[in-house]
Length: 374
Image (cartoon, rainbow, N blue to C red; front, side, top):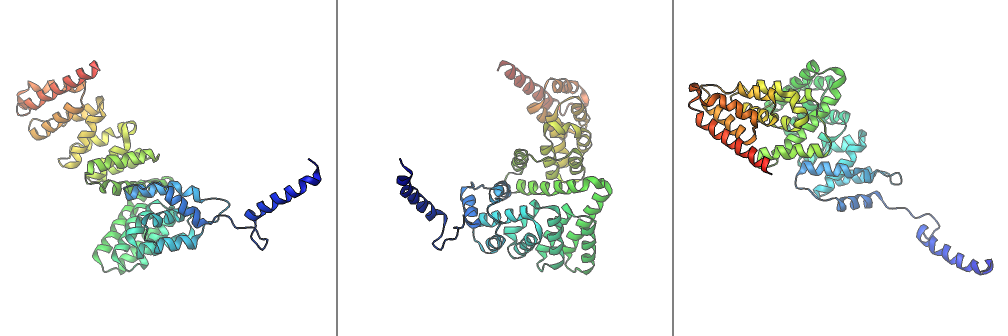
C-alpha cells in the first residue's frame, strides 16, 4: 500500500486515539483519581468478621494505593475518616494514613479518636512509634473525654519513652479524675520498668512488640470462647509473620495475668517455648489459673526438662492438682509420661490420686497403640 493511501487511515487512527487521551480543549485527560482507586481496593477486599483482623487485612492492601502516578489524597482520606458511615472505608482511610505518617496523619488520628473513638482508636496500635507517641501524648493533654485520655495513657504504657513519661507525670499532677490518673500512673510505671529492664538499643523494637501484643490480646477477647480466641489470635500473628522475642514473652509470662500467659505461650510455639521451660516451671507452682496454664504448656511441650517440672508438681497432699496433671498427661503424654505415673500408682502417699493415674496410663497406652496402627 502506498504511503499516500496510508495517510487517511493513520489520521483516522490518531483522531480516535486522541479522543481517549485528550480533552476537547487539547489538554491531557487526567488519569483515574485516588478516590476511584480507593473505592476499587475497598470493594475488592474481602470483609472479615473480626475488627482487629480486618485492620490487618486492610493494611496489607494499602500498597495498592501507593502508586507513583496517583498522589495520596489526604483531604479525601480525612473526609472519609471523619464523615463516612462505612466502617470499612473509615478503617482503610486510616490504614493509608498510618502508612503515610507525618503531621497531617497525626492530626486526623487525633480528631477521629476524639470524635469517633469506637471507629478510630484501634488503628493507633498499627502506626509508626513516633506517630503513636505524638497522638497519644496529645490525647493525654488535650482530650476532654476521660476515655480518650485513658486510651492515650494505655498507648503510652505500651509504646512510650522517657519524654512520654515526663508528659504523663506533669498531667498526673493536674488531673482530678481518679480513673484517668490511675491509667497515667500505670503507664509511667511500665515505661520506668522498660527503661530499667530492657537495653536501650532494644527498647524501640520492644515497644513495637508491645503494640502488636496488645492488638492480639484484644483480638483474643473479641471471641466468646477465650481459649479459642487466644489460639486464633496466635495463628493470625503467625500467618502475618509477626515475631516476638523470647525475652519479651518471658516478661509476659513472669508478670502477666492468666490470659497474657496463655497468649505468650501460644505465640512462642513449639520452636521457642523450650527456651521458656524454666519460667513455666516456676509459674507452675502458682495455685491459680496461671499455674494451670503453665502446667498445661509443660505437658504439651514434652521432653525431659518439662516432664521433670511436671513431676515436681505431683505432691501427696495436692489431690486436685494431681488429678489435673493426670488428665493432661492422658491427652498429651507419651511413654515417658507412663513411666512417670507408674512411680506413683503403688505409692501409699498418693492413694487419693491412684485411680486417676491408672486411667491416665490406660489412656496414653491406647492412644499410642492406635497411633502405631495407623
